[in-house]
Length: 377
Image 1 (spheres, helix red, strand yellow):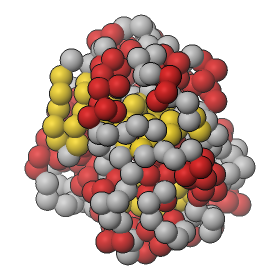
Image 2 (cartoon, rainbow, N blue to C red):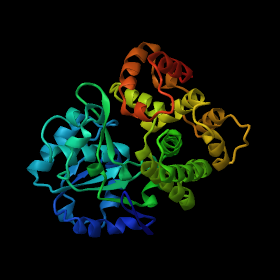
Image 3 (tube, rainbow, N blue to C red):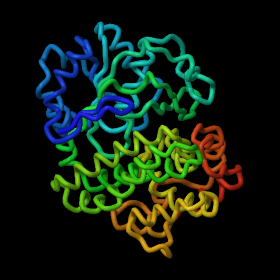
Image 4 (cartoon, one colour):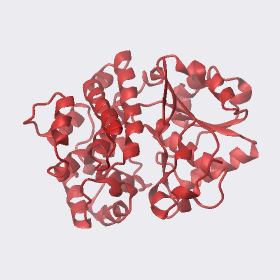
């Protein structure tokens, strides 16, 4: 086990779950609202995560987390938070419960609709230190939200927008790879490609941040080396440890910003009728975006090939696509029910996404359309 102090405090390693009650006590949280989902409850993961928490501190549960967190779900959870007299939040799950919990921690302490706090609406400065304390416990190795300053919420206006603030960092992240040992191969693959995409896309961001670049490259190396093993040998502790560390690296480094992969994934994630997994979308979009950015990122592709142990003549986009197929992920959007009739709405939402602000090459509407076409199959 290790305690890592960087942006926020992270308790990392097998067995760190046992620290939850001590962390809760240290943060002064007496009545936490525990945010998770029904799938984790059914699988026994929620019980596993809470086993060392006193019954008095585990009685307020919110489990109705949607696949992509919505403003309506946040409001529902806030009603429960306030009626129970809660004074903090514990998030247990993948990116959806953690992002929802951040929305609760914000909305329980700040007035008005969430739209006003979105980054593209100038909301960063409106968020204050009153945000309720949050403990994040990831049960997948992908999102990095446990150490991130942002939450992505599908708002009532139909947009999936980023709400960003240093006050949204969880006070402590408890990253115990034991919680991922029973993750299905499909979810391991999708969340693992999410982590890999975070590290690659943040590394390609043109903002100058060498520490973030170094973290991102280490995350790329770990994810690329261990993801296949984690999918094929789910109980392999080395693979699970390294994939959770790669996810952590993605979360630590994407403070530097992301790019078109996420602009498109966020836009599609707002389609409630499709219930699309964010990591799967990232895996599908990444090859097309890599081709789009080629020639606009200096020597960064060469450095990516180096840490991925690819030859300098390798086609980076083709290698990513081949990896996704070897992991059993869909080859294109068409397999997920996406049709060309949706393109106009996807493009409209992608163009206003905050991730465009840190893209090495900002796509036009026409270029977003080409990226969508290239990602259909």
